[in-house]
Length: 264
Image (cartoon, rainbow, N blue to C red; front, side, top):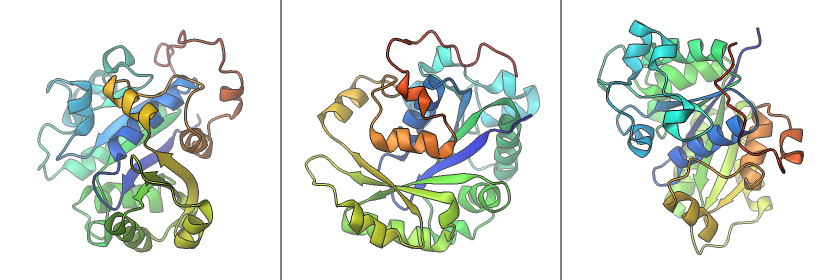
């Protein structure tokens, strides 16, 4: 059985759209007919639970008690083309890292793609086995073949913090960095990012937050309509292993695909 590709979506600072990007990525992969699970991997903030209005009855711990199938929130309830594994009921549990690891490994056998919405990372967190970054993300990247889609801003502190985090991780073979250009700010040219990211990460384009992005978020949609995804998002999907032809034949296919209607 083929195991799912696992990708952590993170960055070196807050306020750069990590959770939104993770949700869009999961939605795009599901729309490309890939059985996709999104994991709320920010135990303190749990942005996906808040955005999708997920009840407390769905929580990470219950996956270890009642099984993953019971713990998952299905697409009909997320409103997107993905299932969700919500964060823990107790974000301070000493078993949190173990619970996440076991659940993500379980999802790997059930899915085509697993997207993990992770909190920010820095050198201290990467070296701390109790943190999500050090206890979950690091072992899965270094020993489990997982990848990181890394968001990096182009303001001074966001750029510096992002580069410092990438330098601490030091896995350019496993990291794709996507630049974030906020509203009204001209994106930096690709050659500048290639120079900054040399030896740290591959460059995955720029996420330009424009009027269309604002309307999408304001509409409370989980992601772009299939075939309308921006280049950085399509590129990330293909980098994870999605078939590029999924977008070449997007027109006229609609939303009849039910990604969790089949067994595996």
